[in-house]
Image (cartoon, rainbow, N blue to C red; front, side, top):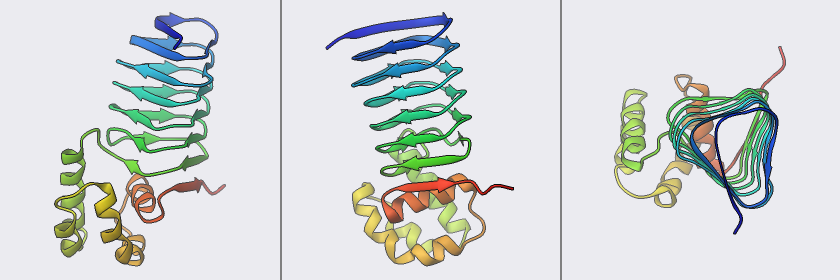
Length: 188
């Protein structure tokens, strides 16, 4: 497999077909395109333009994208995820609590709001109890996503009706119920 490592400040575009490794903080003033395989970033990634990843994107820190972000595989971000354009993820979308996107968000699987299962589970159990769903909170105390999804489906109507969720939480819940998300902001 072809591999290319980038780091530091890069003026212009980065285009590669293979595994693109981002070492440390990397600031790209143009677009990033990785046609077929993956982008692997151990630190923060700041792309001022369009970010296109043909496979999965794994970012160990913050991910900032000034344009659209397209990832045909899973997108794992252990920091905040900021995308000023449309965000399209073909697989699971995972980030650390903060998600920002432009006009639309499309996710082909589940949205995960924490990089580790136990942290995310604790977050949701606390929220469900606070928002009046203690019975559902008890049901998701253990098990992986595939085990939890069937427990959530019967609660879909009540979960969707709750007005206390943030947009990010509402989108994550929708991904559990439907197995995907296709959200477009309404024009004002």
